[in-house]
Image (cartoon, rainbow, N blue to C red):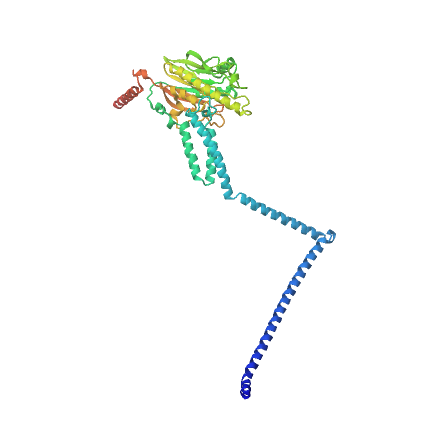
Length: 486
């Protein structure tokens, strides 16, 4: 047994020796690895300590340099400070530019334009809608919204154009289309254009009578000088002239008018309107209106009740047996007391004017309807064509401007006119030929000159205009046939 154990030990000896060798090598290698790791960590720590020392030294140097007095630094320190200040200013400029660029970017500009488009568009739609409803007689005379029909249409164009431009810049094309459609509706409702005018065919009727020229002018008390008015109007050589707002007192105004127009027959009365004619005036009437004359200062509805009555003039002219009625009209106007300080008084006075104008125009219509023979009338009506007060005037007369022009010219104010307040009307006894708004600035209104030809119905012994036109065509055809045979 002992021999076997010895033999086994002898056999296992090399194995044990190999195990011992491998364990020693492993221990040695592990110890080497530990030493290497310790060395690496030491080196890293040394590097960190070196870097920290360098940063500390640089900080100390900076602190020492900052603590060095200006006398030691001298010129170099001042240069450094200047450079620092310049660099700081450049940075501030760059920052401000970047802020401005952000503020004035395309997106912010579009947002601002969109807000402005909504504001101006709301103003445009609101006022124009009120005007349309006023023209359609929606508001009664005692309503606080009554009188919107007297607002000049030019005031609607300003917010409309502004809203349209802003919406286009904001690229909101649907909004711009909406504003444009609403503006077209507004134009059709106000209708100071011939395609909406019912009597636009008046200029197409046949006429074989004499042609006359009629002029109207608001002289504004000859404020620009009666010599300027005399030269300008006399150069036009109208057959009939109707003047409004002649000088006060009226006797002085009549004397000045006689000097300014020596070749004309002149008729005047108690009011500030005057009629002039190249032909003899065989009749003259001054008709009192159902209203009172406003003053130039301190106008309120209560104070205006005690003023003098208002009038319009009617003259009958005889041209070799042809009697023509000439009327000089002017609807009430005037500014309220403290119209800039008190908006409520201004609105109250405007509504008062709108109500009185409707009464005056209704009274004038009744008077003109009773006249016999051809009639020409006009003057400063102080109202736009679409106003309610003008409907009675349009019921009895043909607007020569709308009958002869697609879009009539504005007459007020004289410098940069944007409203049409001065009109010349005629009955169907005349054929409107043309109308011209003069460019000379001789008053606060522009002078208007109309040309019209008398329709001689009696020449053919007819009752209606259709019969008259048919017979006129036959006569023209017969005349042309005779010329052809010759």
